[in-house]
Amino acid sequence: MAITSYPFDSQAVTETDYSRLFREFQTTGVADTVGGGGFSTYADGTGMTVKVSGGFAIVRGHAVYSTATEVLTIAAAGTSSRVDRVVLKLDPTANSITLAVKTGTAGSSTPPALTQTDTGVWEFSLAKVTVGANVTSISAASVQGERKFLGASVGAWTTDTRPDSPRMGRLGYNQSTTTWEFWSGTAWTNLTQAIDWLAVVNKPATFVPAAHTHPWTDVTGKPTTFAPSAHSHLWADISDKPSTFTPATHSHTWSSITSKPTTFTPASHSHSSYLESGDTISWANGSKKPHANSVSGSGTYYAVWVEGDGTFARNTSSVRFKENVRDFAIDPDDVLKLRPVIYDRKDVEREDGTVREGRKDEVGLIAEETEAAGFGWLVNYLDGQVDGLRYDLLGVALVPVVQRQAKQIEDLEARLARLEALAS
Image 1 (tube, rainbow, N blue to C red):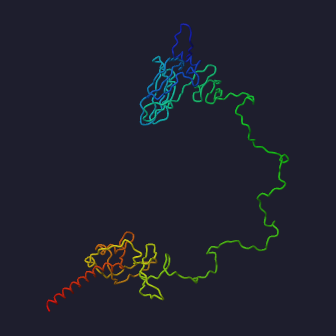
Image 2: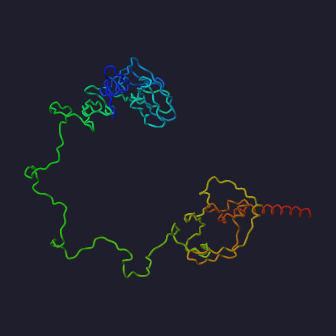
Image 3: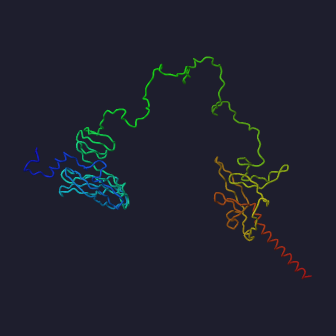
């Protein structure tokens, strides 16, 4: 194993040897205090730049000294944010320590890693710079310091800038926690010391007592009697029980009831004079057959409408129920184009599988043909499709036909009277 020792008289000592020796005496850092101005990095919104104040620092056993504030250019922002780093860059090959900006990765919140080799380039971070998307200047809030500071027998730092690889017993003041701490070999440990109670500031005026117990005899203001807590008794232990018990309100399922009758006589009831939604009426192949029933007493027949929900309503014609009354033009020739037909109803299969035979030889019109002839106002629609005809309005359509024929008869009679007068 080779052994090297230095420095001695007339002995060549390399900068690597010197650096290795000096870094044992002093760690890398800025010769200033926490919060001081040595090599402090800041921004004032002046374009894409940051400024680094002058100062003195030790970087890997080499010294750097600056007497002026340096202005560093930050690379132009992209469409996504990134985090750059301002560093002191030790380059033994170039025999220099310079200020440099390391550009971060677009879209990442992690700053670029530091290059730190034993005998080559070694970078010491001064600050992180957050470069927002598409920004044109760097604000003061975008710069976060990362400097570490030199120490002698004791040091000063923040939690984020504690010394790297400290020796056991390294002592310093942590500004983040406002405590003195030392390196135990495995962790940073706070120093403790006895403090006089009177010297403690911000003490609470009162203290919540810790969990504890008291003997019964020490408890004052106890009640003489105590309500019993929730408990139970065995049935056999209860005295003066009644021999029978009235059953509480309850119910039975239909299946549990025995000796039920197979049929039930309906209770006395009645129906209102007018059919309402839900009432049951007699049907016969789609017709209620009012022509087969007689009106008793002072009763009166009414023409009715049936709405889509099954509600019945009178079909009224009195002008007291109407407004905006005006003439309605009907072409008699269109009426004469209507085609009366005779037809059979289609058979209908019931839910139980049986078939109800449709009526035969019914007489009427075809709704689609009536609509095509220009009489859409006679057509009923259901679910957007042609369904039926307003046969009750067909008489209205025939009125202009009868009126035209009456006029023609009147004209013919007048013509006949003139001819008879000439003949006599």
